[in-house]
Amino acid sequence: MVKIEFHDPSGSLEVTTPHAPRLQTLEGKRIGFVSNEQWQAYRMLPLLKEMLEADFPGVQVLPLDSFPQGNTLIPTEETAALVRKSGADAVIVGNAA
Amino acid sequence: MKNAVSGLGLAPDAAMVTFPIELFLPGSDISPVRARKREFYDGLTRWKSDFAQAAPGAKPLLSVEGASYEEALFRANNLMLTSLWGDGLPLWPATRERVDWILQGSTLPRDHRLGRFPPLGGITTVETCAIALAMAGGRPEYLPVLVAAVDACLDKEAGFDQLQATSGGPFPAVIVNGPIRKQIRVNSGFGCLGPDPQRPAGASIGRALRLLQQNVGGALPGTGTMAIYGAMRYTNAVFGEDEESLPDGWLPHGTERHGYTPGTNSISVVFASGVTNIRRRGAKKETPEEDVLNGLHRMADFMRAPNLAVLAGYEKGTPGIMIIPPVVAQTMAGQGWTKGSVREFLWQHSKIPAEQLRRIGGRAWIEIDANPVTRESIDLDPWPICTRPDNIVFLVAGGSHPTHSQWLQAHSPSVTGRVVTLPESFERLLADADRDLGCGDDVCRV
Image (cartoon, rainbow over all chains, first blue to last red; front, side, top):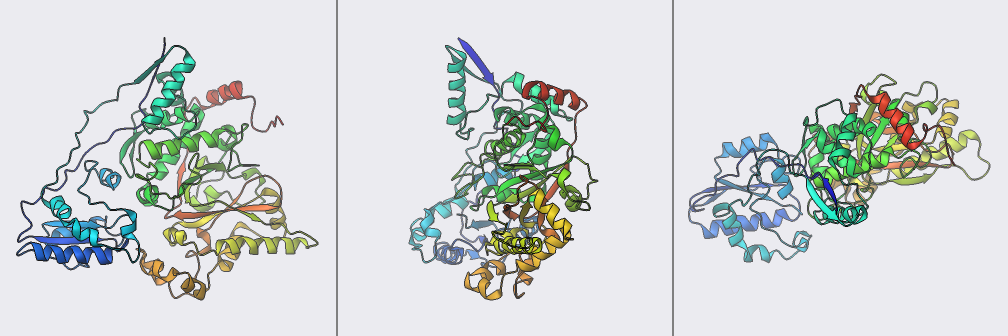
């Protein structure tokens, strides 16, 4: 038998930041949206806002334009700092296609 | 999206609610969002990552066996394809021996970390590059150019994370300047954007870069990259500027764009989104001056096509690469044209009338652009395709024949340069190449 041994070319991944902890409940929480304003976000995110407000007593959903919008602006440290400063307990990011 | 999450250093999964593409189109029925609202709520409350961090350290070698070498090689190729590491063409298995051979071309330790390859964020070392180059049929003397190109791609200003993923399918175009171009057989002449058995370096280097994009960066068609067509993505475009044919006073691209001293070995990465041939030459009884001027207008007219990929490089990048053949460059220089005056002409004559911009819905794209400089350009009439003439990359390359020029429209937030550093053993590597491939690239066998 002839054997060929070779390298796995896929490199390796390194997790340096944990995902944010999930909330126990959405009731009474402050929820934000970070939007790229594309892919019908202007229709879907208001619908989500409306549903959250209807389904969870005391939830505060921040206005959709509370944070910078657009693909280039939403992944920046400046946007992250604004989200932290807003006191949001969670954010929904959209839309990608 | 999972790639993007991973590229930020998070585990490569995320709380997502996904829908068919039709939901994201204008006028769509978005009632499925209401029907699946619980998934959004669960994403904020109950979701957990399933990713298990692998133990640090080198991955073990893979192993295949066969009754013959041919059968083992066949199985190795099958394994690479089923592992989603291939491109459909035959691959060299990156054996320890082949990778060690290629690493002779490095000035850096094999575990030197170049960065995280976006969007997936795979750790990219010199050895990772050597493995890709081995698979792509490369040689050690190619490695310095590949490492420089990867380093340029990973530059934060390059915007590579979005370029890898975007539906427009931009591909790296790597321009090589300096003596290394001829030394390692990068093509700058006839067929320089395609295959050439006498100058095979560009194909291997570009293919290796592409394999890194896919295997380490996660750019798999339809998931990691949404490139709808993916043109030029077998080998990208790795070619040289024909510096020897530059007219007197015309500086090499690496000098003009990046300030490198002429004669410096360097690369420059532009992300292109297409390759268009332009029939430049006149057909009948034009004077030399008319021939040049008509050709310049034809080039500018192509550049004026309102493909809004140019917005990405509006301020600091480039709208594209215009390449003219050496014989045309000499004719133009004889009439007093310089690289600078050609760029000025192309910039002036590629401006898009506001009415055309309005007609194609271009204003909306400008309005939503993240760059305020771009947004502020919206009322210019005619609208220039970049902020200044110098943003246009203008090169002399290709076969010395006057009929055509080539336009590589860009989707390129930056034009990133790197000096190529060579190992002490470089002369020996070149001698080995002469031994293996025949003597240098000035010798044409056909």
